[in-house]
Image 1 (tube, rainbow, N blue to C red):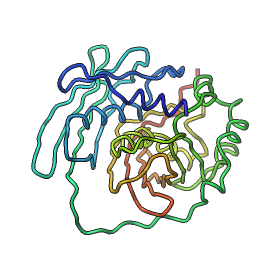
Image 2 (cartoon, rainbow, N blue to C red; image 1 turned 120 degrees about the vertical axis):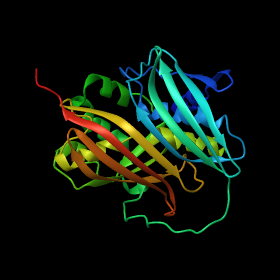
Image 3 (cartoon, one colour; image 1 turned 180 degrees about the vertical axis):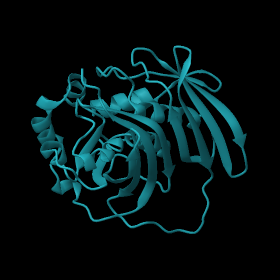
Amino acid sequence: MFAISKLLDILDLEPLERNLFRGRSPQTGWQRVFGGLVIGQALVAATRTVEGRSPHSLHGYFMLPGDPSVPIIYDVDRIRDGRSFATRRVVAIQHGHAIFSMSASFHREEEGFEHQMDMPDAPRPSELPDERMLKERLLPEMPGPIRDYFEQERPIELRHADPMRYVDGKPRGLGQNVWLRATGPLPDDAAVHQCVLAYASDMTLLDSSLAPHGSSVFSSEIQAASLDHSLWFHRPFRADQWLLYVQDTPFAGGARALTRGRIYTEAGELVASVAQEGLIRRRAKS
């Protein structure tokens, strides 16, 4: 409960002026700001400038690593307010430089045609070990900053359908399935659930591109970073209930990897889709 309360507090940006907000980072020992936090805070900033519409898509680019020791300023540009859609551009600024930019589109609720891809077969979260097992097996092998992060209480609980991939180091297929949810109850506010899912959508996705190579972002030999991130919201959902993050990686090459995700409720409803390109390279040996 403490971790999710702290996340909600950090997502509650401080208004500085019209279209200008200030956010901060949790002090977790990381040397840079978690990408999902910047996505979530940027969406909060954009959402606070729109009335009568909900976000249906966002597209962001990471330009510089964030500095967790100083606040992040979010500057929102109200590009357009139409009858059905509204468009916003958000720039996150630190030390006088843009570290992240995002375009977001908002749509008023209306009826239309419906179809979706079915949720694949996957073990239910109740059938999977929790993170305590992974911590016991992996913590001694993790680099210091990552170990410090995993030893702390976190706002998002993850249950991997194939947790042994982090233990045996064997190559896997071109994808993975991960269950996720907030570790405590969230308010009955759809915007809060969307912003929490935006935060969580950056978790584990790039890591799926290393599964075919028998590695992970936890390896000290790997340098990994998100380069861009796109997220589409399809249906209402609750981020404090289990959601299945179905991930695949169509391509890796040139030190970059493309990853995609579909997010389902336990009932099989597709509620969001994600795409991301990231940097994955082996660190130079000293």
